[in-house]
Amino acid sequence: MATVAATITTVETRANSRKRALENEAVQSPKWRIRLGERAKGIRNPIREIMDTIAGKENPSKSLVSLAQGDPTCYPHLRPSAEMVLAVSHAVNSGQNNGYQPSQGSARCRAAVAAFFDTPGRPTLQAKDVFMTLGCSEALSHCIAALAAPGSNLLLPRPGFPLYQVLCDYHGVEVRYYDLLPEKGWQCDIGGIAKLVDKNTCGLLINNPSNPCGTVFPREHLEEVLKAALQLRLPVIADEVYAGMSFSRPFVSCAAASAQVPILSVCALSKRWLAPGWRLGWISVHDADGAFADAGVPETLLKLCQVSLGPTAPLQAAMPEILTTVPDGCAWHRDVLAALEASAQCCVRRCKRIPGLEVAAEPEGSMYLMVRLQPGVLNIDDDVKFAGKLLEEESVAVLPGQCFCAPSFFRVVFAAPVEVLEEAWDRIESFCHRHARVKR
Ligand SMILES: *Cc1c(COP(=O)(O)O)cnc(C)c1O
Image (cartoon, rainbow, N blue to C red; front, side, top):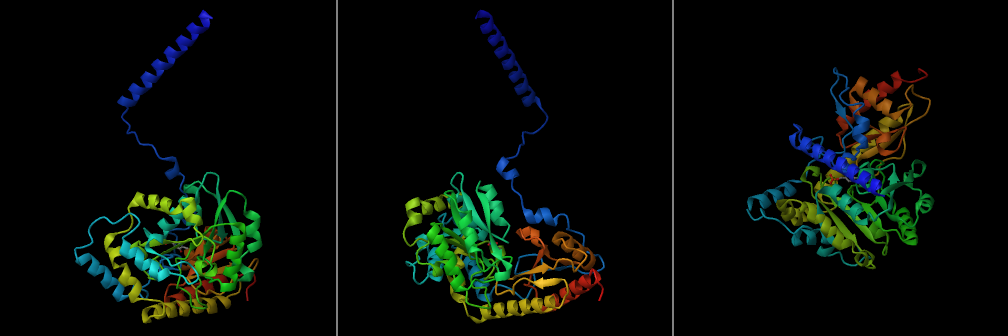
């Protein structure tokens, strides 16, 4: 026994002296103590990873035409309204908006959002139901974080906006994809949704109008999807950042398509109001039966808002005017939709003429269109290679479908004016003729 005890003591002493030596070495080390957080290090942006293999390879003899960036202000024909800009400038110049606001947003700003997004058939949306955020991205992050119980999984659309996956990884939520069906105008595979659900499923994310598909769900379809959510008792995160950006049929929100399902609807000034750089977004909590309240979701959203302390005070102060000066159907809004529709139609018309390309479903809203590479027609079948070669030879940038979990498609942003799009499609057309397997 004594020997064992002695041995243990010796081992301990050695271990301690080694530890001390390491500590001394650390104190004397010339290196700074910089290590990285696991969660931060783990952030993966799929678009960047795919695009880094393509980037910077445009043809130096042709000017770059980008149909890749999801920013509606890339070209000068789409701009926030003069009234919106004036409202912000007044808010800054008044000198009244330099201080901190409540973390979830100023009461006046939240009341304005609540009034704008109040939905018939639902309890009146109130200021207390609205949480202001740094763009729609932070709104999505808060919603996913709030529902991210240990072991939970979230149902995401495929094809879909890549940030959803990034946020799920970051908040430790397992991702399960439900399909949007191209042959059905990118409607949801409702039967598939039920098969993915288990006791750990924390919600269903619906993005309507869609990025990257450009579709706007008909009311009947949205009602069916929400009926499934009701039967499965799945709360919904509704990414409605393209609300009001529909030119084919009226946009119907998730809250309007179901009286009961608990819905966290997220939106921002970024798309319909053409001001992504203003970084103003919000969450509207539609909680008819009090299911979110019972689970503590509003308190949790408030805690999450207390991390960044919310968007800038001048922007919040300008919100009531921003929302009332450019309502749906005003001249500015009609002009924006008319420009987007003309651009969408130009893309569809030009694309349909090109052998090897196929419009998966005609765009109805947002500012995107998915194009399918028909197998075997071109000598490039892979969408990443297609996007790479198109940039290299024609200096036209599009995003490969793999960025959205949709291989053999590519996404076109039609927020460019028609003249720019005609030029882009001229180049895409000659590219496809050049790469046809069978020359015509
Ligand atoms: C652009 C976009 C967002 C992010 O909007 P921000 O307000 O710029 O953060 C969220 N969801 C979808 C589908 C988008 O296209």
